[in-house]
Image (cartoon, rainbow, N blue to C red):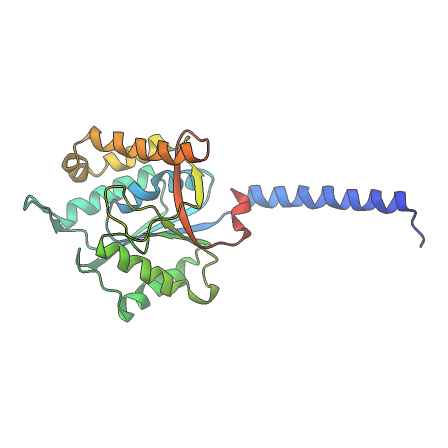
Amino acid sequence: MYQSIEDKCSSIESFNKLYYIIKEEMRKNKKLKILAISAHPDDMEFEAGGTLGKWALKGHEIYHLVLTAGEYRDLNEKIHKTEKLRKEAQNAAKVLSIKELIFFDYTTTELPCSGKLVSEVDKIVQDVCPDIIISHHPFDSHQDHRAAAEIVFAVSRQGRVKNVLSSAPFPYRPNVFAFRPQFFVDISSTIDIKLEAIRCYKSQFEKFGNEKLTDRIQSWARVWGWAVELEFAECFEVIRMSDVFDIF
């Protein structure tokens, strides 16, 4: 049947409107699974707590895998016990509305990037089926963080995980291969949640000077926000990304 140019244009316009209406509804209703993989308890709260809290508030499912048992001896020879650190992690998970907190039992400072551990993390990835993985930067100066990043690269091979992000290393840590800020998340609405989660780690909170620590974390988020005209932000380097981030 013959259509005039006017009719064709009208049909195309109607189709485009319908397409964007459907796309917007999908954006509103799609729920994602995010898996944060950290070397130690408290790592993700510092590096991505505002982002995880924000995505949880949007209804997405957040999972947190901690690869080490947590216990360690600090520079003052004080031993921080596994039981206490795990309790603090559980309290922080509640603040961030994390759906499931999973602990492995590897030794702090001796996290191996081994076939055994890769297989164990692989099983978690198969069970969770995450749309997004967040972990450490591969050139972080902490050896456990570097091992965690390598493990994430291994388990997200062959496109099994469509979106992989590396979080920013702490500013005080030397980094020969500089972190490249590429993906910014506005955490202006969740900066207080992030700081509350950090305060749950009383052992770390006291070690780093109590509110002096949260002041520095807030300032760090303000600097990232300044880069993209936001009040507060967290920043990530993109290892892999699909168009799933349309939903944000």
